[in-house]
Each structure stands twice: as C-alpha cells, then as structure tokens.
Length: 241
View 1 (cartoon, one colour):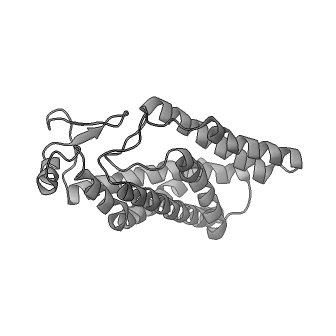
View 2 (tube, rainbow, N blue to C red; view 1 turned 90 degrees about the horizontal axis):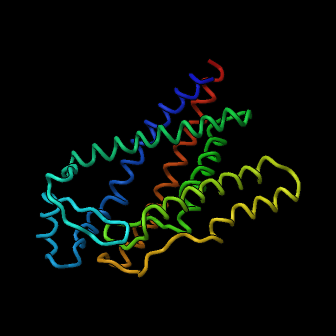
C-alpha cells in the first residue's frame, strides 16, 4: 500500500506541477511581475524600479511594508528561465506533497477510485486548502498590506482542519446530528475571523490585487482537478497491477 501511495504521489505531483506551471505563465505570473513594479510606494519610476528588482530583491513584511535589501543578504532567482525553472520545481514538490495526502485519503476511504471520482477528491482538496481559507485570507499579490504572519498562519491551519473535518462529517457520517455538527465545524474559523491588517491599502492598485486573487483561486482549482484526476487514474491502474 505504501508503494502504491508513493508511486501515485510522484506521478500525479509531477504531471500536475508541470501543468500548473504552464497555466501560471499565462495567469498569475504576469500579474506578479506587474505588481512588483509598484513595490516601494511609487518612489521609483516603473521601468527603473523594474530594473532594480533584478538587482535588489524585495521582501514584504507581515505588517505590510516593503524593505529593500541587498543582494548579499538574500538570494532570488533571476527573471526569465531561472525564475520559471524554480517556480516549476516548487510546483512539482508541492504537487507531490499534496498528492501524498490525497493518495493517503484514497487508501483510508477504501472505495473504488477512477479518474472522475479522483477529480471529486481533488476538488475537496481545493475546498480545504484554497477556497475556504480564501474567504478570510484571499491570495495576496506582492506589495499589498497584510496582518502579522503568525496569526495568519494559525488561522489558516485552523481553517483547513475545520474544513477537512466538516467535509468528512458531511460525506462519511450519516444522520442529521452529524450534518448539523459538520456545518458548525465548517463555519467555526469564519466565525472566529481571520486576522486583518490595521489598515487596508498598499502600493498595488486594488484592481490588480483583485485580479490576482481571482486568477490564483481559479488556477488552484485547475491544479487540484488535474491532481485528483491523475491520482485517480494512477491509483486505479496500480490496483490491477
């Protein structure tokens, strides 16, 4: 069973990671590159600032301000092929990690799995790790304001745990009592509320930030659908091998 989980995770993670990297090149990556031109509060002209980004990488602190730091203090991939290669590598590693979780769930469920049912599992992963957290902490483009990192991460973990638990109760526990409990668990992190910055704003135009949030969520949905379909297909083939 462990071999089956590992093979499924490696194949599904590789395919979904490469696929979503291609999609990002036409969706979120151009928005990120555009948003990076606004970092620094507009004190530098667009083209000059864009050229400085290649020499002086920037970091966005938890309280939302940007600080310019020297190349000796932090390294970042250069624009172009190097940045694309590292992004693809990160996507593949992320895909393998999520595929291992998905394959483990397929094993624990003990139900027949194929491509279409794998997509449903993938969409459940999308709801747990992207959609539900985005209700409180939408994807942030570089240069936008944000609350402190630790409270945001704590709320994110609470949200994914509550969403996963609530969906499990809805699907696998029959009875009205369990359904009501599932709804309560799903709503808990949103009743608590995600931490928000002291003030809203930033150097990036709100239209660009909104575009990035929407594109990120749709891109994540595609990623999880591909991950689920490939995982289901590979899992089904390994079952008969």
